[in-house]
Length: 399
Image (cartoon, rainbow, N blue to C red; front, top):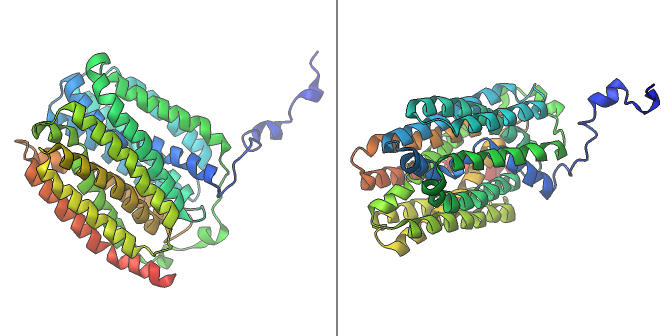
């Protein structure tokens, strides 16, 4: 006979999740956990050179096939991020994120066994949709935190820190053990985020944010900031997806390329750290405009990648300013409403840019025309710097 006095009432059993110990809502630990959650859905972007190189070297895919698979993965993420815009106010985000993380783990496991490029393209497109939805929801939750720029800075710190480790360690392992090691890395990251999820607070939408109408949002500066995010991400990812092959075409060896990418990603932590340190102390316009221009100059320097030290310095500069600038850009999008819909919309623009970059590059690289690709990226970066003047100045004046 069972002692029912020790059994949990039904309501208590349903609230076990709620009674899990939680970190402080707006503390540094919460920023770290939210950063892992938002990164899990799109971590493959941070190791994109390793994935593209691994598909080429490990599975024998062509340059164009590898680029299209990368684009499919991120275009799927853009679709998922767009869906997130419409559900973030009403859906319970924790159970949804749990289901999405489990789905990502399952799809990465299936990817370990696929050998055909078109089957891989289709599967990674579905994976992208799920991951993009996860990231969009996470961005919306981040928008409900205090000092949102700091949380986005922590997000970039996690992405660049662990992404740097991935692009340094994984490419040399693919010829030895096979391309499956790339997807195992993604599984491990998603599992880590899943284990962290119960420790986060609920971050409910405030009543004022629920009642806010879309007409209350200033659309012109919002559209400008979204377009700037798209241009910036497309310019950077178009080159980053092929940066290993660019270095090899310039005559550099993998022993030079892999450490350069790893160190540049790790030093990207410096850029995200500066965002956490500065926040809006110096406004948004000046640091953001300078950051994007430095990115453009460093990108142009890749014309001289045959010189190992130029390849190193250019990648380091891009790593730092990419993390620095995108944190401010996403923060600007998030500041237009605290329910998180505009942050999710900024995430959609980011995914569209990240997906369009490799697609544009794949179309331009019929004969490995890297000088043309570099010039296109520089023009897009300068355009992003000019477009962001309007929304950044507007928010600075409001402060």
